[in-house]
Image 1 (cartoon, rainbow, N blue to C red):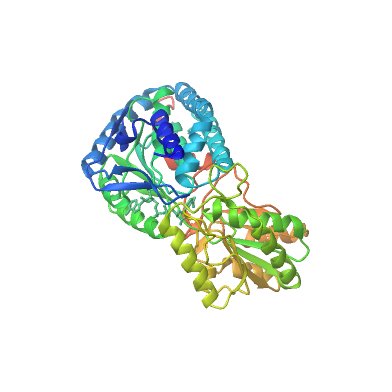
Image 2 (image 1 turned 90 degrees about the vertical axis):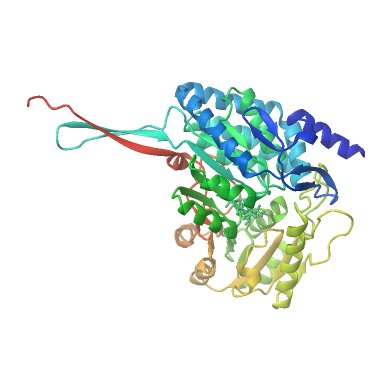
Length: 496
Ligand code: NAD
């Protein structure tokens, strides 16, 4: 065992439990699976860090049964006590922030700087929803017939949350916290590629005073867990974050019950730069929009729409800045981006860049040749002379690849932005305030930035339209996703 793998095993042991017992977390215990062994691979070296057994349907059903029991206790807490427990969970995340960030960086491939920021955001997410537990109210409705009519907002019961590998602990908290705040229990199914920080979070939830079974985690393959969990009558809702293709399958399975879904899927967001924009600021933001988390970001600004008059100059400066974007080891304090999380995605990115070049795009910087050495490192890539009919402009790459598409007029920019199956995010850069608002109103997206890119907070609604999914997973709006309304009547008029 070399130094870094012994560090890794020590982190796992302290945050989760013995590495040999990695599996699911049910109640307060780790439960090892009985299926095929699944490798947990270090994205920086391609070496296997540990192996764990795939789960099975029996474990999934046991985890759901435990969630059902935990939810009854959790919903019986007063709203204030639930809020205190969630706030305490936020404190514990802050207490363990550095080891959690290191474990997240090693296993996901994101940089330690990015992992620290996301772990801090996790604590903030629990703080934010802790404040909502006693503030999401029903209504008194003025019905005409002399009765009192009011609504109660009740928890759904047990929510299944399925999450991807690109931001494991952040997306776990993002989707678990509001469900818990509304009195639900959650069965969390992280990606099989990044199973560990979800386990650490569930362990902290127990320490924070959430009853056993309020947050369980099942680790294993999507196909092992998906149908078993969605088909079990204990599951009352599915929140899914992942690819559009898997989202469609999850949606179809949920429709058989039927139960509702919240789907956060892929994107191909347009970052629109007009010739009157602050081009220096737009250039800096375009790099972050394309390369943050090494492009493994659903809201990445992967289509850069640039007005003809400044196209050549602007794309050249984005190319220079992207070439300076420092890809390095996840634990390198100075790296801007780390490796791609897994081999399949690493190979897919190279194929997509090659496909774009075959379609006639020109290489500004980057390309298909990996920088060399072990691990899933790719070169951030800018492709110019792309038009919106090319596959490289239409399909999500989910890597640090940005295509630059020229446009003439405001109407052209809006038409190109909206000519996509995806509708997650986007941005417009201009000094013309009226135009900024006109474009923001007309671009089909759940999230639109003006003269900025990428800022996000749990208090604001996040989600997409069309093939980017439906529902909003944050802010006050998402609390409707995790409650059901009961309308209560009683007669109160005097007389007969
Ligand atoms: P994926 O769809 O392959 O997997 C996501 C999760 O679904 C994993 O936990 C996986 O095990 C599980 N899964 C796979 N098959 C399943 C099945 N049949 N039933 C139930 N679950 C199943 O996605 P990924 O490759 O892990 O993540 C990348 C994708 O996630 C990208 O498309 C990205 O845009 C998207 N994403 C979206 C958001 C958002 O908020 N919109 C955020 C992050 C990532």
